[in-house]
Image (cartoon, rainbow over all chains, first blue to last red; front, side, top):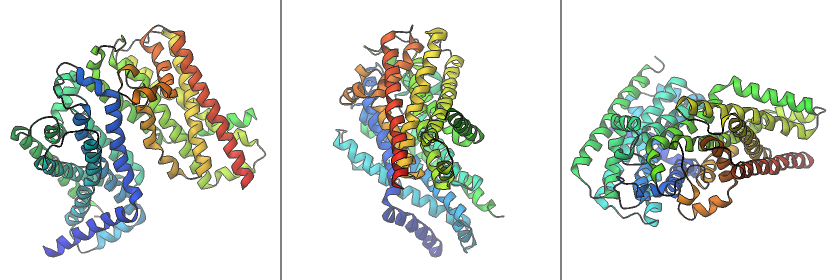
Length: 255
Length: 255
């Protein structure tokens, strides 16, 4: 068990080293959700005047959680791109030769994505608070961290699946589109009552909606267990399904 | 000169069409954003001050076209930079052809590609029930402004590529596409945007290009927005087209 933990820790350390040695590599994952968050707020903030919108904390508070999840999605996709690079350069083949079970190798990749997702989330939170978003409380921030890390881990599993299937960095758009679609086809822009019927149907079926509502609740109102537990269950469910598929993909690799 | 430009433009188009995996993101991302914006914010048309339109989807089509054309500009820049990195550019420079023809060929292929992008979004609109209020002349106006704007955006990409000579630098500009887009009235009426974005949008040529594209789609053709859109597109194409040729000549002189 201790050996396995050491393998996971080594892989996480490798990913963290990348941020320390090439800080520029982390910029797109931070920049893209920040641009989206500020851009959407600048352009669409008047929609809070619509009857049925509900939230009175302003559009930035409403959209900030979308930025968190976008950052998590992009970070997870970046893990997939990095894996594809490792496959192209032959480093992954050497990793597969190591006497470590494949699920442990996957755990290292996924754990590093979960950890890295806190970088864009922290930056976005600072920007949001600086621009007047009310502080949601330490308890809610901890819940946000758990949900964001879980979503980043799920996105990393998706990125891993795609990387193992296509074995090239050219598949990066597919990894990013997956995260993009999962996060935005929810109640990202407006509450469910204001969505078009087809969008509402997709949002209702999309488990990321529950995760988003769980992250959003403390920013637009009081935190509630009725919203928290579905968010935790949805995050765990997504991670379980994508994790199982990624483990299957890892086991099939090279066999 | 004209034969060289046409040959290079044909080559550029053929290469683009041969690799649909690189072409797809130019329409996939804007189409997804079009769906998300429409599904999430369609009620925005009932906001006081929102101009009368048949649907929010019709209002958003020009935004998707503008976004797609901007991505086309990035793509043209990346293609030019890759030709420089791989040595094809050196062979072109060594050939007995005018240097400006090398750039103009790339820009002409971007104009052809822009027509395909415009076609995609107009067909998408027609499929989902949008009526082009300006009729056939309106469609022609959209193609005219779209192709000129596409040429101008490609010129920006080519200028950057010639200056940097590196595809990853041009790729790094990608997030800026969204910055300039959010700071324009492409997605929402300028009067309903918040300050300072609304003030910046007033001076952003993209606002005029998007409004010029939008006018024939959402209403009978009106001279003012169409001429302003045309002037902005021609201005961008002329300024950056000249700059790209000038940058290339300067680079070759220094080499």
